Image (tube, rainbow, N blue to C red):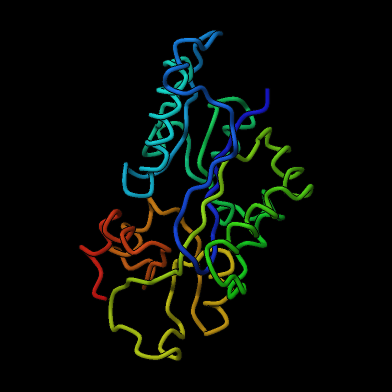
Length: 238
């Protein structure tokens, strides 16, 4: 049976949103009429419950409600089921039924999806971004790449502009980034390298330790609230 995967993209601009594939679910009044066995999906996540994951919490609640409790999606935080870079591996062997994954964490696993990591894409608004996302995910090459992991994409996540929070002297101009070690994924990493910075890739759950120990000079995230969610504001200077 093909498993399911929720995808975390890595775009350079836009606004955060969840999109969900069109599915046929009964209304609340029809819920008692749902037939068949009870089904529970385990969904692998990294980090703690936060603003980013509230969309998944809502989906979990609504799916259970609209199926009269026949279909339940249980969320597992903090890498309980799998490390963030290994969620697709877990999907492929049937360790769990659903997962969030970031293609930029492991670019070699889903090369067609990494086109969305390119910096400075001319995506002028949220509607355009969503259409581009869906076009990429529905492309035969993307579906083929996911099929290798026995996975099917259910929901893309469109990300806003990346921002940085770091330690030491804050950069006042582009040239000040030269030599700085930045947590910058995918295309953002290539853009960072172009201005003389040294990009590195790491899961969000490792950023607090990396910044506090000086392994990196700054952390890049696409959500302003994320810095607080991972407590980076406690150790950052700017």
